[in-house]
Length: 323
Image (tube, rainbow, N blue to C red; front, side):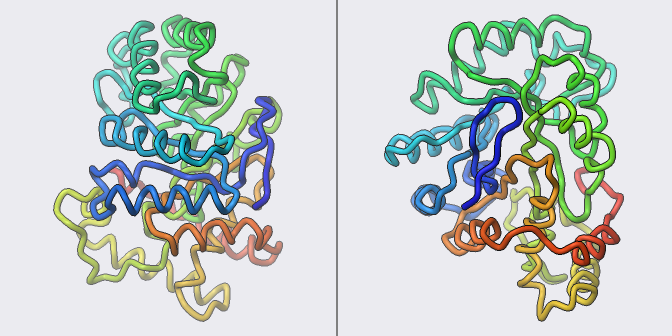
């Protein structure tokens, strides 16, 4: 496992981290607590030292499992969590004031709840789970961050950027009041590379690259006939003819890279993200031992060649399956 600086925080974090939404028991159906804990343990045994969770993931269930696994490990593991929007609206909506989403006291109380779930006194990183640039000049988020840092609840603060809206964070980066951003970045959504990443490099902002496999679209496991359990988030994300679109896109990547099968795509997808110098850590979800092994191996495989990067740059896909 290789490690990178998390921006100006100075933390050395594993370049492959752990995205803990999938172990929440809701929206991602199929993982048992035992399997999730085994995956977390295996990841930490393999050198992973950064885990991203959120209060909204199973209403604290993900945080509870993460805390349990980290405490049992005896290792120094960097934990990031998130304050959910008070109105429970993802993404943040234009015209909706911050008083309905992140009032000061709510930021503090949510952080306290997360610490109780984790059974810890402090996290390394607390993030706002959505962001609206209309809030830039408001004091609520600024005072909220000041308070939770002053109380020792978190060492650093950041935001999780709305789906497919990387430029919405450019203003808050300029303030110097946050340490990290979390953003969707994958072979299909390459938009952070244009403006966000240069700004992060300029201001030494840590980058958490989320959804590296496009919610499963880049794993190579989805077929046109794939069915997801009722209540599983992916049944919505890949509804109608979207599975066909995914298969066609994956087959094109396999052909252009000269791969033997779709099974080789996930490693290339992770290494594509890690090839960008702005990225501190990429946080795929991992609920099985095979996923842990494959994802951690991507770190040791190194960056892609210039030729491979040039090919994958051509596979950017402008669309929003969250709608």
